[in-house]
Image (cartoon, rainbow, N blue to C red; front, side, top):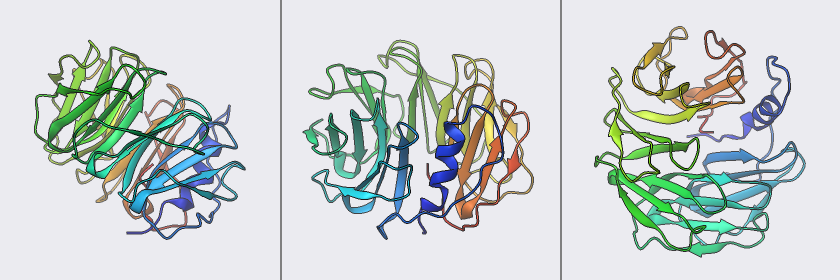
Length: 287
């Protein structure tokens, strides 16, 4: 498995641009040989990445250079969520949860009381944060990570991605074609169905109606909904035997998808059509 960093500058430039254009690609040096699983830029200059063996790195110059942060764990960190340049959360294997309020200079150890691997974390605001992971685990805090409660997801499948529009409305996806939605802050989750034979890798909504999930299904890059997830329609972007692993939209118009073997696509019309962007890499793109 290869590294993520050939993508960084293209994504950051794309996300923070005001007008759509095909991104230019610049290979960047991460300063690590560890596999990297997540990326978040909080501004044009400030970004964070996470990965194997407790790897957390930061850039303050748009990705031109990166330096190591110390989250106080050697377990793999699989996900991160930042509210601004300073306040953010990370989650990973063996139930690792950490929080920073000073841009990663220091990390608070957060404890859920569980050692289940966590695959995704999402901070709604300064108080409310959700995380999900193996065996259908969903965690929630309402006090910035001091205390965590488990929520009944209604599944024992491994959960790969969680996303919330606000404190009440959110979705999660995972293995075994798992999609769940909540409209009451995770107190209950109900099933949404999609006709796909494969795992679901990530989920993102731009508003309460329009959302996308990426999948490992052959020749289907992603599924799209315009009714809050009641119905999902497959979107095909040419021959593709690779798993799509991450998706993000700047707004209802501009978006990107990344996946295995350097597959990368961009859309400038709300996902109606997509163009494959040559990234010059065979790396697996996770975020």
